[in-house]
Amino acid sequence: MPERKAYSPPQLVRVELNHEQAILSICSLTAATAMAGATNKCRNGGCKKAGTGFNNAGRPS
Amino acid sequence: MPEPRPIPTVEYKDFSLKIHSRYDRLDRVIKAQMELTYRCNLHCVHCYTDPYNAREFFPREMTFAEITRILDEMADLEILYLNLTGGDIFMRGDFFQIYDHACRKGFLLMLYTNGTLFTRAIIDRLKQAPPFSIDISCHSVNEEAFDRFTQVSGSFRQFMKGMELLRSSGLPFCFRTKAMNWNKAEIPQIRRFVESFGQSFGFSTSLSPRLNGDLSSLEYRLSPEDLRVLDEQEKDRTDEEEPCTDRSDWTSSPPARLYRCGCATNTIHINAWGELGTCTMQYEHRASLRDHSVKDAIEKVFSEVRARRYTTASPCGACTIYSFCEKSPSDARRETGDAEAPIPYDCDVALDRAERALHRELIHPLAIPKR
Image 1 (cartoon, each protein chain N blue to C red):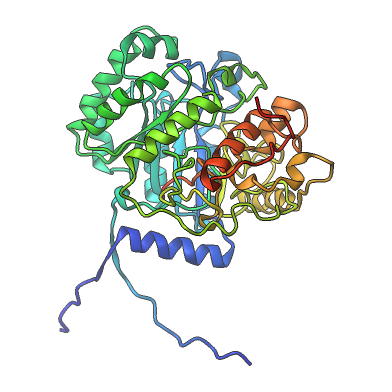
Image 2 (image 1 turned 60 degrees about the horizontal axis):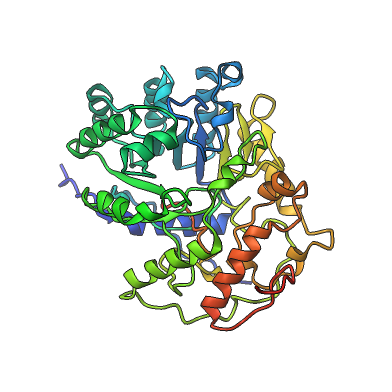
């Protein structure tokens, strides 16, 4: 039987909202910024490892 | 009495990463985009919603009661991110009633607007309970080109007035630019304008048919050659970044599923008529929230989208450069009459990008000989 994960009590934290720290995830909205194109950069999630196609990155959230 | 313990503070990026990872594991929706209206004071020539920005369509739009009911249901489902868009959100007289309701429900709010309707009163109202971000469309900084594109004389001046109000407001905002054939030469100026606000500049290039099936918006697409030039310029500007060296799955065997994007994963889209889908432009599968609860609509639409497979001999089914392709099934339906069919423009662009990324010649997905 797999070992059960140890219980950790819920924690109250304060989150400082900062939209400049928003992360990109898989796209399903047409609101992508910038493009990766053929620049070989992953900054915009421009390859499947980041879960999306070129120039089709997720909206930051 | 015990000493009150301070509440630990977490940086937003860590919080966001944790939320996304957690809900990915749980296979749950955490984001929603809601079009509050198709009404807009502008008539941008590339805009997919503008055909429904006409008086005869307004009675079909969601009422305040319908919107708040949907927001309540979304909050109950623990959806956290809510993007309110249009049309233009400020065209609704009850916008701030909707906004206040969404704030009370605890959503992280992202607002999309064209920026021309900002007034001191709107800015002050937003400052009382600031959204997470405000995204402003910025496709030109040239008065003549801006007004021609929006088809509204004086819109550029209104835009600039709005941006100055926003600049001094302290509210969080960023710009969204769509690079098209009519503004491609203006990209450096738009970049300077955006950067003058202390913002980083980026742009997208994909255009979709309009919601009523009109394809005129596609006339503003960049050619694959123009895209290559812009990509190269972008590459030159970002050379300080780490190149991605893992190309192992860039040309792998394609999955059989029709939706190879993030559709039916963690996001829903609700249009101004209360129809729920998986993406702004996904119209193959929708459920009306006038007949379904949000939960039931998600189950119905997500299972339909996830079940879709390539069933015909479409070249897309076997395309090995699909990860460079932006084809959306709904766009393909509107452009070619068949959701499985390739969109030749997307094939051209994907091939060009794949060849540059992989540094070798590839066969065109439609086996079109090179010129």
